[in-house]
Image 1 (cartoon, rainbow, N blue to C red):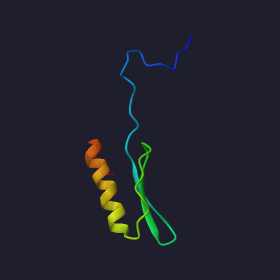
Image 2 (cartoon, one colour):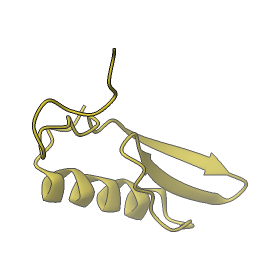
Image 3 (cartoon, helix red, strand yellow):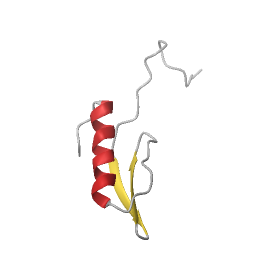
Image 4 (cartoon, rainbow, N blue to C red):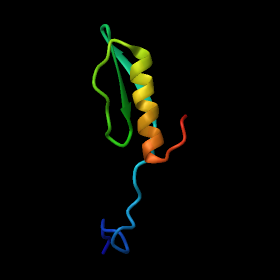
Length: 63
């Protein structure tokens, strides 16, 4: 029988981090494939910086 549980506790693979900066109207926000997202900002540069900080904190390499 196939099980969805990992072979050993704590061994599930975390999702990879892929960052996207999107715009909605005059606001920009960063989202990550792991589920993280930044607040909407009027400054695109600030949204990009917050995304880069998230990647740095998670240990992921920027795309």
